[in-house]
Image 1 (cartoon, rainbow, N blue to C red):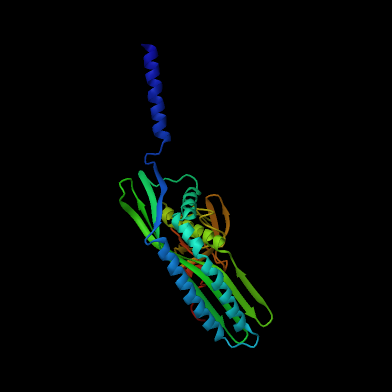
Image 2 (cartoon, rainbow, N blue to C red):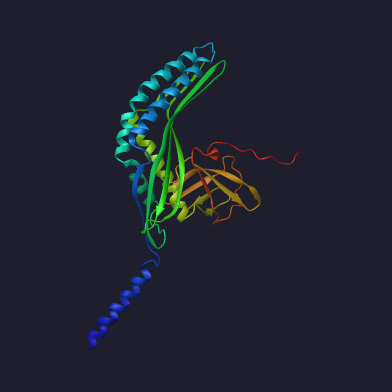
Length: 311
């Protein structure tokens, strides 16, 4: 009888320890299906059509640049060669589409697990999504002594976070832009870069995966300031979700205007940022929420000069 009581006490003790060690609201967050709104052939056809239209517009823009150093001719040549290999990318696009964008799904899964232990709350949640649009954008600028042209891929996706019953609890839409070719010419120099189709589509899927992961994770556990030494602040997420050079907006207690910070250092689970102008961050409160600016967001590249009282 005494041995029975001893065993029972040990079992009760182990159950109590397990209850303390196990979070009261442990849940899981995983990646579900990823598809397209239309057939893969539809997106390939639209891709080829937009490439043709954009490349034609680029040639017109380049021809309109009347320079003394031949920049217009170089722009036309670049546009024509870009259009040639961009049309061939339809095969790459069709391949990743029929495979339901494997790189998006794998990057999304890895990104959501990259910040260590994460508890979305009580329940089982799944992130699903679909590609709604993909296109090609070309822009050109010219002056009397220089010319610049850029070719970009634009992709739009929607995503939803569902619970175990399939109900949508959270969702959104985002558009990512990815540069595939750049040409810069001046009177004395020329710079040109381009990438292969497989490389571009692989990197584009990764960018989409990271962007969706940020929006989903920041919904459950917002991006916040966790430390501040007056010159730089640290956040509760780190690489690869928060990459070096990224722009993050924070607010101060003594100013209504948000402060734009640039990530200058990172450790696992923590990113550190400071003002490009080395402005004081002493009024940024620990625990306050922050906003991550994607590369397409105006805050990511636009410098805002705050006015002050005139003397």
